[in-house]
Image 1: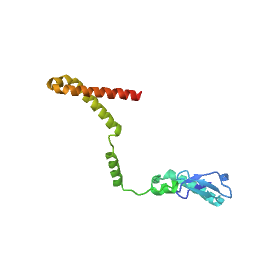
Image 2: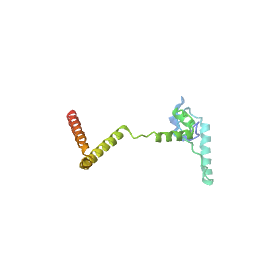
Image 3: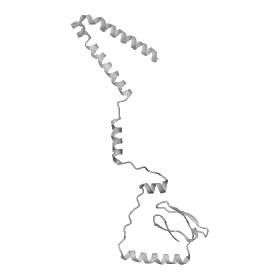
Image 4: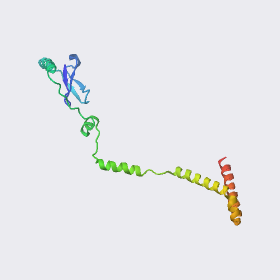
Length: 164
């Protein structure tokens, strides 16, 4: 038996005994359309078979016509097949959204903490290396520099005890 899809007009060959007199639910393998198929009368079947034979003879002598493919991503098809509703959005606003998303990228909290930590370590290292030079040029700063290093040492000890 030859079945014809109501939606995309694709033809399928099905065994005659597959469809009973009470009908059968069938689905198109191409577009997914479902319908109830009832058996065709034998007269119609014979004429269809004759038409297929003549069509095969014509195919041998003529050039094949190329059928345009159905676009599977149109809003109508997606709504009919999958029940999806796609809202219209202009492509310009989509590009603006992408630009805004790219602009919103930030450095991040932990990145700032890492940069601050590296900056403070570099500052303390430079101060340690140049401590003797600063004391020679400015002898009154020696007391403050020593207090500063004492405070750093106390903070370090308290942090290590807190962590442990």
